[in-house]
Length: 306
Image (cartoon, rainbow, N blue to C red; front, side, top):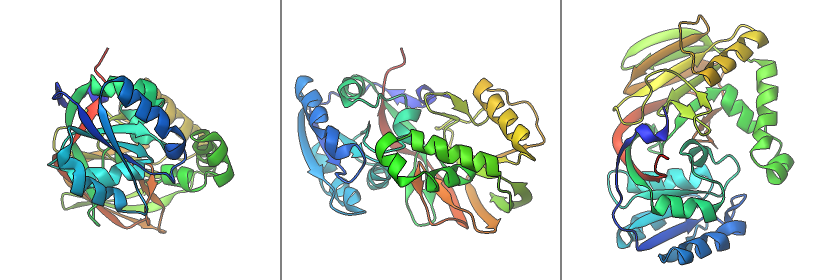
C-alpha cells in the first residue's frame, strides 16, 4: 500500500516552521540553503536549528516544536527517528526532507529528494496520522525493522561509495548480500506465540511498500490499522531470491513456501547466530530485539495524491 492509504486530513495553514538540520548527514549541510530558499519562496518563516550530537534532534524537537506549525527534518533517517520519538502523540506534523544517504522514509512517502520540489508539495499536502513501531530502547520508526539481508546490505555498503554515489552504494551492498544468501535460525514471537523458522531476512513492517511503491512486502499491510506485520523470507537459493523479488515488484502475494507472514502488536526476534538489524535505514545493535506497535503515534506531512 502507498502512503496515501494512511489516515489523512488537510493540514492547518503552515506559516512558521522549525527546520532541524543534521550537518553531518551526507546531503544535509550542502542543501540547507536550497531548503531555506524554498521556504522563503513559499512565504513561510523558517527557523533553522542544527544538531550537534546524536540525540540532539530529540532535545530540539521537544523544547521548541510547540512554537511552530510544522517541524521539518533535513538529515538522515536517524534524525527523523529522533524527531518522531520526541513528537509522538503530540506536537505539530513532521515534514521529511532527504538529507541522508538512504532516505528510506522520504522515498517511501513519495517525497522528492530535491527540497525545492519537496517543500511546496509538503506545505500544500496532507497530514497523515499513522502507526509507528517502537523498539525496546524506546526509539520509534515509521517504515519497518529489518534483520538479515537488508541490514547486511546497509552495513556492507562501502563508505567511499556512500559518500560519492549515495543510495547506489546500498544497491552494491544488496547484490553482495543476495549472492551470499546467508541463512540463520529464527525464533519469532508474535503476541506471545512463538515460531521457529529458517530465514534469510525478517522485516517487521509498518508500510506495505517502499521506494515509491516499487517494492511491496505483502498484501493488506497498512500503516494505520494498529498492527505491524512480520514478513519472513527464506529463499533456498539465488533463483528463489530473484523469484521472490520479482513477485514483490509485481505485487503477487499468493502462497509461497519461501514466505511467512504474521501480523500482531508485540514482537520479539531472536536469531542464531546474532544478525545485523536496521530501522528505517539506521543500523541497530542487532538481534535479539523487541518491537511493539504504537498506534497512530505519528503525524507526517505527505504529498497529495495526484
